Image (cartoon, rainbow, N blue to C red; front, side, top):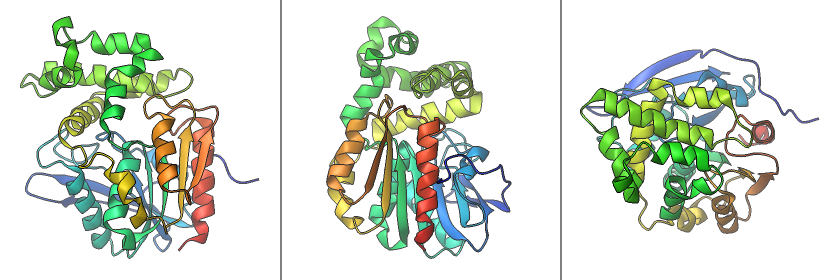
Length: 316
């Protein structure tokens, strides 16, 4: 039977930071086999940061597992910093890290915003990619952002009521700007309160079945601040031009092996975006998990992703 569960916990064999400009310092780590096939893990959010669990999608005997906390996220500094924080800068950071580590080509593994960033990097540097494993597709289109801000209440009215309820009724016509005003407040108490509400809203809608652990993790201060500030910043200021750019530029990477894993009941990143990507990229192996939502930790999603990393062992 193909493997479908996490590999045992492992520690990195190397960690470090890179000052990518005069403002941002990016954290990175390597785990697994130093001589193995390189794979770059790209976390979601934007702004969520990576965790030790993310190393466990990969066979540590086969893969050289590279993890980076993106600008403003996780262990990178300054936490929640939005200045000089764009998709183009993140793509440059990934390429800077690749050169720093002496890696010629690598696999990309990314979910949610990580899928967005993986597509953007691969379309910019297709010659540096061995293949892509993508989950919970997000293409940064206005319809997807509006869905997150307003339409998720169709299925999660209680979570949305708590989210929107943080904002006075007369400001709810533009929830993004109302939250941003608070997330960018000079008062740390105001910033943190808004960040926690935003992050818990997303966490509450991220799994098919309620996950108290996921919701609790979403409310943790550092995670919430990085996620909410960076995510709102990207929703406001870092759209693609044209907005379907990632679909238009798929031809640059259609020669690469790819797996798209999507939960049928993903409410944060609905299946329509994964469907659009697969229609543009019919060669990709498209797997809809029938009993899953958004979270990579759900059993069906986790199994499909690990099976994909096992299949990708043939690509070097």
